[in-house]
Image (cartoon, rainbow, N blue to C red; front, side, top):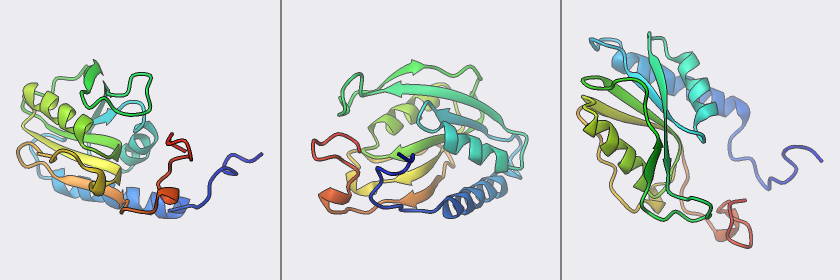
Length: 173
């Protein structure tokens, strides 16, 4: 059995993904080139680690990288809507620009929690960079901090239940 034999449809090819990651990295480089300090790139563990690795390799600035983990699922497959920080930053973000890197922005609950957490630590701005944005599933508005920007790789529009990435049992496929 091959690794991708369970997939019904490929949404984006590897080349399309790498091209889009390079475009986002170029935009981040451009946006922060004139900043007095390069941004701190904060990956949301563990889902964003591959996207984060691909992205930071292509950002042409002397960035720092850290990880944060927020949990809202526990052992369930549905979010409880009340995320908690289970792994905090090691770097000090006070007065710094932060780019928060997520794999998927869905309801926005976890992301809003993380943005608030970074703001409480004194970040001067918080931008978001997500591989996949699902705005139709949003339950909360995403409020960026300072001059924060929203970078997205791809956007998933509403689709039929069969295309939703869920199995017949409602679990992620």
